Amino acid sequence: METRCEDVTRRRDAVAHAKHERDHALKLDNLRREKYEKELAEKMAIFDENVDADIAKKMAEAKALRESLEEGDDEPEEIEI
Image (cartoon, rainbow, N blue to C red):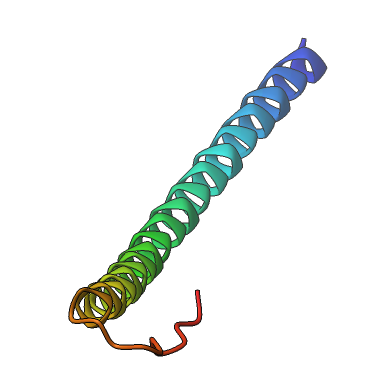
């Protein structure tokens, strides 16, 4: 009977330990994911700003080219697209 009690106690402790390890691993995983999502959002915002700035620059160049063509300039400036 004593052996059976020790087995039950060991099993209970092993399950409790496994549950604790699992909870700890999930907590670390959530922290990593939150950090990754935050960094990704920051980098995406910077990228979007750069893309918007580049588009605005290209639009301004295209507008200037169109205006110069409408004025009758013979040779338009080269625009790299």
